[in-house]
Image: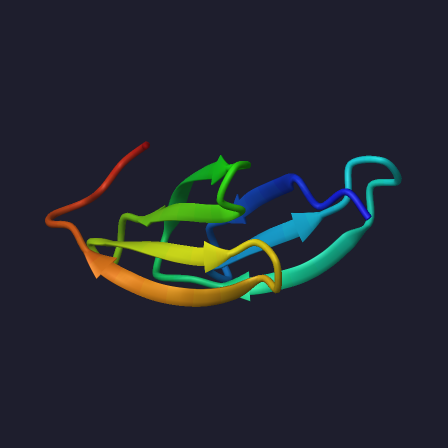
Length: 80
């Protein structure tokens, strides 16, 4: 399965993992408040989400779509 599409949803504070071949939602991954940017490292299969409302970055394991850690990065991270 090709799971290389991740998008953020501001209201429920989730990142949505989906397939690209047949666009199907695979997982809703809970992240911090007001996620606004998602970056994927295809070599490590890690996903990084800036959570503006919590001043954090959520680090997601793309192999199993679980949160590995949440990093405090300072006031209002925006973009990656």
